Image 1 (cartoon, rainbow, N blue to C red):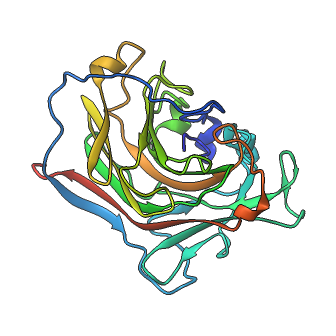
Image 2 (spheres, rainbow, N blue to C red):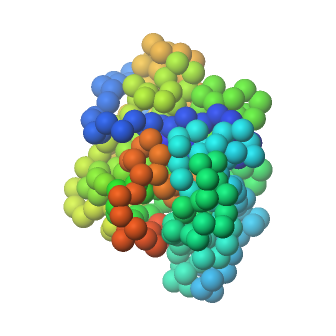
Length: 295
């Protein structure tokens, strides 16, 4: 998420990919000189979210991160978020139409969050401990997002060594983050040692048509020398290792796991101004992972 709205134990760490309340601007003018990314890919993993309505997410592929982050010493997931993540079927389940529904909603003041009675529940799932992507790969998902001030959906990658080395040294690639208050834009970013938080490597992309409330395909491709982001098959931002080394050590050679979540409130888009935006649903049509065809 930028992050972090994010992670479990490893989230002792997360500070977001774009933790700021300021209006988004296109950041960074990286011009990588490294060799090109692969042009042919072979799919090695996917979740198409097929199954009956109300079914739980596939536990052989995903793990639920639960709570408000306090049990991991990072209340509000490091971003002052307001949600408590849940694995309840009302927050995360298949919809019976080949999609995963992640739902953020207000809750009665029964659960306790770091700031008092929890105002919202939502869901966050990761492939940590189930599946990782190595030093060269492509990850994509087709997603439809909710609109509204204070909604912060994200599709991102976090380095598998976060519990050992901490964030941002483990690395983070934000494939897509959205501010619910800016429905015609999506954000992508890279975080690592010396380039984290309000990173110099972040880019806002305006959709060529439609908005976040339509299905779009978000993707990233990378190898140890370069990383490139796509929306609906069109590249919109690229960073090379040469550019990264100006700020710190590149994380592009690391392994990552996949995360999907819908955060509510926090630094990125502020807090909700109206309860009329709920329930807020993030629909994920599929997640697919690829390796170079030559491997």
